[in-house]
Image 1 (tube, rainbow, N blue to C red):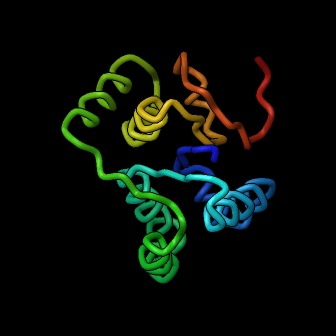
Image 2: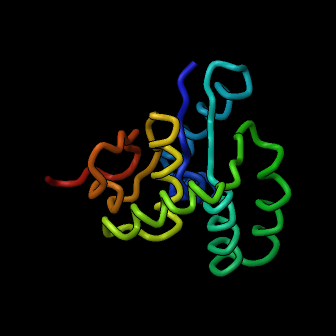
Length: 138
């Protein structure tokens, strides 16, 4: 069973029904539902999705996310004090958003890939990415 951490980026793309993220996230959710995959997400990133959806798409869609997020086959992890320090250290070392640091720290904790399309994560060495965003020139 392959474990992956989800950043807020693929979830937001899925909510907005943007390809290829929509199909990829749907397949991962189906795999997690059947027990073939394990999906994790930091509670910080779950909240990040909520505030973003509410701010840019309205209360109705945000409420829908809030209600459905707990029913998806994704384990939502609330960070411990140690994990908060780990995320803060990543934020202090690399040019990533604070919420992104929680996704990165969770992926490092489980030594698994982070599913994202956010190019900021490319600045974090030793972070395995399952890249589903647009191609980026190196």
